[in-house]
Image (tube, rainbow, N blue to C red; front, side):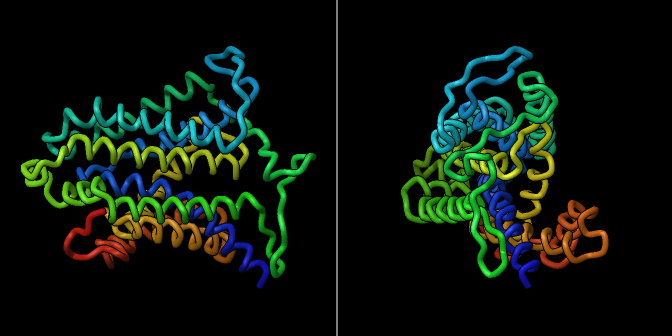
Amino acid sequence: MSELGQQLVNGLMIGCLYALIAVGYTMVYGIIELINFAFGELFMFGAFITIMMMSPEITLFGNTVGMPHLNFFLAIIIAMAVVAVMGVTIERLAYRPLRNAPRLAALISAIGVSILLQNVAQSIFGSQQVPYPDIPVFTTAAGAPKAFTLGGVYITYFQVFVVVVTVVAMLLLNFYVRRTRMGRAMRASAQDKRTSALMGVNVNKVIALTFLIGSAMGALAGGLYGGVYHAAWPLMGFNPGLKAFIAAVLGGIGNIPGAFLGGLLLGVIEALGSAYLPMGSQYRDAIAFVILILILSLRPSGLLGSTVSQKA
C-alpha cells in the first residue's frame, strides 16, 4: 500500500507540472486554434533562467559570468517575467503575420520556433546538463531534501510546494478568465474574434495577453521541474511539452480545468504504469502516446470537452 501511495504522490507532482504547461497550449488553442509547440522550449528557458538567477556564477557562451545569486522564489518570478516577454515576442514575430494564413503555415512556424529556441539554448548554455542549485528552504545543510513520512509514503516539502503552487495558479487563472473584464474578452475572442473586434475588443491585445500568461505558466513549470530533477538541459522541454499537449487533449483542449485534470491524470497513469506494468519503466513515455490514441479514438473532444468546441 505504501508503494501505491508513493507512486500516486510522484504522479500527482509530475502531473501538476504537465498541467502548468498544458494551460499554455489550451489557452492559445482556445483563442487562435494554434498548437504552439514552442511552449516546451519556453518551459526549458524557465528552468535555465531560474538557475541563472539563483547561481553566483554560470557559464554562458563558454565564459564564466557572475550572477545575482537570488533566492529561489525571486528567481522563479524573474524567470516567469522574462519568459512571458519571450512568449509575447514570439507571437508578434512568428505567429501574428501568419494569423490569416492556412493553419499548416502557423504549425510549421511553431515547429521552427521550437527548433530555433533549442539551438539558441545550446549556444548560450552548452549542450550538457547544468546543475540546479540547492534551495535552502527545501533542503538540509548537507543538501538532502527535507521530507516527512505519511502512512509509509515519503513526501518531500518541495513536492508539496509544487502541488500547492499548481492548484493556486490554476484557481487564480480560472478566476481571472471567468470573472474579470479581460477574461471575458478572452472568452469572447475564443468564440468569435471578428465579432469581438466589432464589439470593441482589442483582439491583438487579448492574444498577446494569452501568450504572456501561458508562457509564464510554462516558465513556472520549468523552474519547478528543474528543482525536482536538479538539472536543466537544452532538450529538456521536448518530452514534457509533448506530454503536456497530450494532457490538454485528454482534458479537452481549449478548456482550462480540463488541462489541469488532464495533466494530473496523465502524471498518475504514467507513474502507475511505469511501476506496475511489465517493463513499464522502459515504456513510460509510450504510455502517454497510447493515451493520446485512445482519447482521439474514443472521445476526441476530451474528458471535459464537448462535441461543440468548449473554449477557455
